[in-house]
Length: 337
Length: 245
Ligand SMILES: Nc1ncnc2c1ncn2[C@@H]1O[C@H](COP(=O)(O)OP(=O)(O)OP(=O)(O)O)[C@@H](O)[C@H]1O
Ligand SMILES: [Mg+2]
View 1 (cartoon, each protein chain N blue to C red):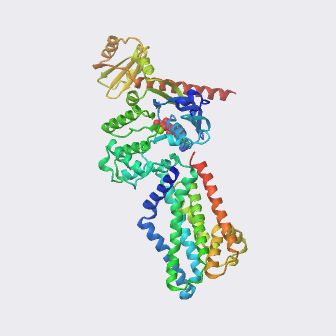
View 2 (cartoon, chains in turn red, green; view 1 turned 180 degrees about the vertical axis):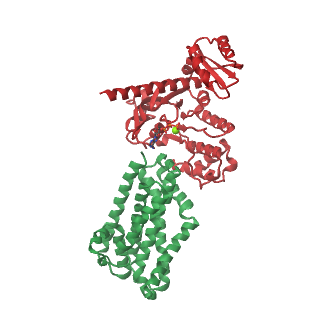
View 3 (cartoon, rainbow over the protein chains, first blue to last red; view 1 turned 90 degrees about the horizontal axis):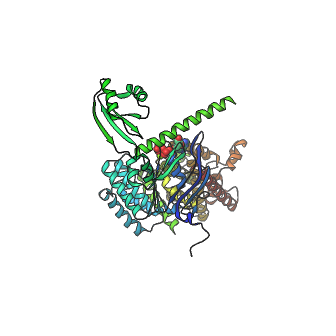
């Protein structure tokens, strides 16, 4: 009989986090975050290096003990007993950490056994998964001899061998070629379509944009925004972004540019080019004239579709700036008193 | 049931990939062989002394066969991070630790049989009390494996585990009454002897082979079992504290 004492919202959330915090000595890795991931959702967890993404995953999956806060996985309180919900979770860590001396097939079977799968079902599933991740031909080769991309693919297969309800992926496609990455994304998308809840961290913004339904941004251990992809992109849709290809490095012209066009943000990009962002209309003619007057040829001007990348840079940049200022402020205050 | 599938497969994998590897196996034979020959040559009195040194050689074979094993099965996997997968598995930590140590215990017991078999070729062992030897061998294997676990939990690098275990092992050779009685030790070292589990295991072995035990067998075995339980509980606590950071 289904329990009725459990509030509905708890039963529905695959992951629920309240006031989660963790510090390593001086470093406040995760500084009290709250969020929820719905059952069946594809949730993105983005942030710059060292923001606290891996630390959060480690706490959710039972590899790290939170200093504070509540974690509920599929309604099960894991704050006290981090092992309570591990049977529901699959984890693909940021490093491919299978057993180098076992071959591909043995690694998958062993991982299945760790989750209590019977011999026949784990062997069957291992064979299927080796096909799925394109490693059937390498099934009998040692994991230690795999290439980086092959290791990554096997690690993903190992994370899903036991058909977890919730899958945590820590940068699954980092450091592998385009075709493999695309293949992996398809595998993950299929899993989600089949009902698996996905928690993904990645540094590839397009990846998040293509896959995630909702995204949380974490900066220096704090969540600065959690929103649906549609809402996030709507924010930047009105923004105009133009990329100008110049004959030379625009670095020294940034100062005068910002003075002349105060409503526009300028950002140099590789290949002697410059990006101009604004929320208003972009005065293209005056811009080009500005460069002509200085003897710089504008060889190309491209309008760029604003994407999640702009959202990311904007959100994390603004948040970082604000946090730095707050820190300086508190230091100054501390110095006075 | 699910836990048993996991435990059994961890043990099987460790056996296959670490314990039953040729270097490890030959080590298990060469080591007791070397100890035995060394003491033969030193005493120079031939086969008559075999019975006198057999308990010591058996105990050393177990001690050296087990303590360094955990440096491989635990420290090595910690370093390669595959150990994290074991911690992520829905398996009680107690079961995980037993799975990771069971292989070393089995190897320790197997190592004890090498000097026994060798001795059986040269001297008459019909008067030894076998059940006592079996109990002592099993408990020495368990306690020294857990000592290895204790060390493996405390260090990061494989070489540290090895250095640290030698720090324990070599003094134990002299302090536990393996080759000469504890009564011959300087008085200030004796308390140390009684704090080491191997002392009690060695006493049972001496009693069962030569009839020269200092304490009743049951007392020795109970104390040895106590050491096993305490070492396991300490290691478990350390594992909770240090591995789930
Ligand atoms: N075991 C640890 N000991 C000390 N500090 C740690 C430890 N783990 C993480 N940190 C610190 O906590 C902060 C967050 O690290 P974390 O690995 O969670 O970041 P991340 O968002 O995953 O970064 P990346 O994108 O580079 O993977 C960092 O400042 C890091 O140095
Ligand atoms: Mg990380």
